[in-house]
Length: 96
Image (cartoon, rainbow, N blue to C red; front, side, top):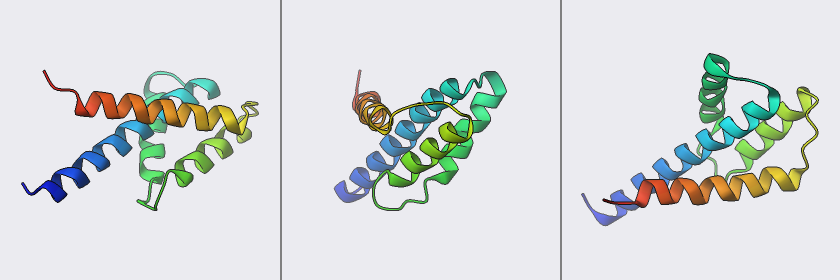
């Protein structure tokens, strides 16, 4: 595998994991659990159209929280995004 392909694959995996972690956080804020939480995670993942940056995910989560009448500051969503991306990067790039 060429280095460029490895970098692209890593980026894709980190984004997918970040989106999953964001969906778990938001879904729990909304009150989802079990299968409902897993379905929501898939929904969030599918919302990532590959557009540059995480704006699509942030916008979706903010809209979903608002629709569920969950008061969460936009800053809290962004903080969670940053934390989720950091966690995802560590998980994906860690080796034994």
